[in-house]
Image 1 (cartoon, rainbow, N blue to C red):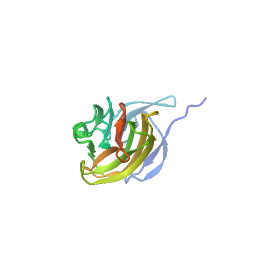
Image 2: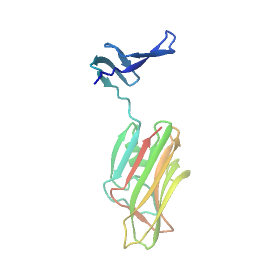
Image 3: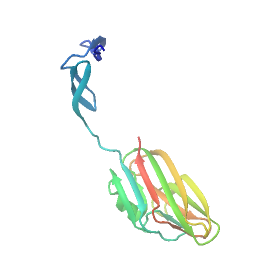
Image 4: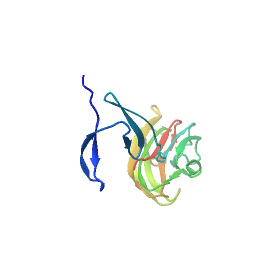
Length: 201
């Protein structure tokens, strides 16, 4: 079997391609992420080098370790239950979630938000809603971005309500997950409910 040498583009001094040539021993390949030297051995290109790792995009994932408190409406994580937080790049996000029940977006960009909360009720039937909202704080101005609903009965609870949203946020925007029941009914978030925020663009 004949040896096959890898090909490369050749460039003029002004950077325009001028032709195709075979790689030679000692040629170097470069890119923004990878830099390595090549050695030609019987037609095979072998290389050594290292990848450079960039800073990961911010994400925040948290879940409840205990049942929350029954209420007509509440921000998930606003002091109603112990939360486990796994975060990267969200400045002081855990204290915001524990104290205020919202996450302050750290960088302008596109975010994916996903919430999954199981609820217990004391009245059948109870319509339970889970909302992804922007807020100025509890009792302040709220704008609904996404909504999911479930009808729950006492003989089948807990039942999970799910809601997700992808959208652009400016740095500093407060985003909360609101969990609420219809009328004067109450709903209690079940342990192991989870919410995640991920910067995707």
